[in-house]
Every structure is written in C-alpha cells, then in structure tokens.
Image (cartoon, rainbow, N blue to C red; front, top):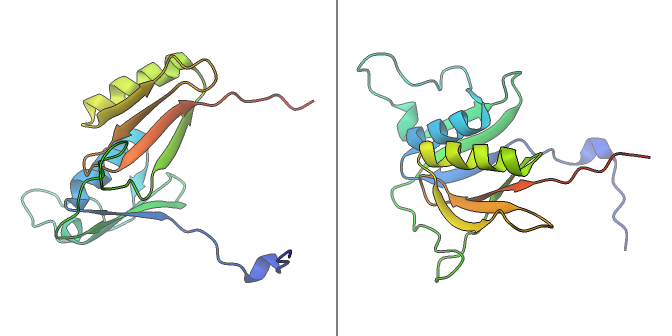
Length: 151
C-alpha cells in the first residue's frame, strides 16, 4: 500500500532533542563541534548570573536561524553502553566529512571538546568512521562520505 499525502499536510522535522543531566555543557559541546548558535535568549548568562535556561531547555540553530538541536534537562539518564551492554543507544547522530584527513581533524576536535572514542574504523576502505560518546554518553558517528559526481 502506498501512502500518498499532500506535502503540505505532513509534519516537518524541526529539531533533534537530546535528554541530558547537564543541558548547558552538552549544548556547548555540540555548538562548538557543529558551528551552531544559540536561539536568542538561550546564550549562557553574562557574569555570575544564574543559568536558568541551562537547567531546563536550550536550542541550537544554524547561523542563518534554522533549528537543529535542543537539549532537555532531566534528573538522571543512564548512559548508553553501546556497543556492548544492556543500555542501547536509542538514537545516534551521523555526521559526515569529505576525507580521511578531515576525519582525523574532527577526531582531534571531538576529543578536545570532551567526547570519548567508542569505536575506531578509520582504516575501513569502504566507509572510514569513528563512533564517539558525547558528554552525556549519547553515541554519534563521524564518517567519510564518498560523494558521487552526477553524470
């Protein structure tokens, strides 16, 4: 059965929301890694003011304003134990780069930002990749995309 719908009547993906026990730290990790910016009002407070939004809900956007990611504060969150263990990853982000050299550059950035390497297949001839855990333990991949030139 083919589900034919009017494109105007379908919902549109707005953003990916990650639960975390430290919304500000996780938002800062992805802001730095992906070059995103805070939604107006979600920036870290100046000086020593209390970070009320950082204890609840934060949104990151592209520099031109398109929503991308949000971070929802929760009291506790079991860290994924992927690839082995009883707590599945439940969701992961796929990030791509153009070359193995770029993969190495991003590897160093991820580690510098506090990410943790979970799996290294950077020497795979078909799809070089690495899997990391972010600051909250959410797995994410960075892999080389072999882009085909249209004929």
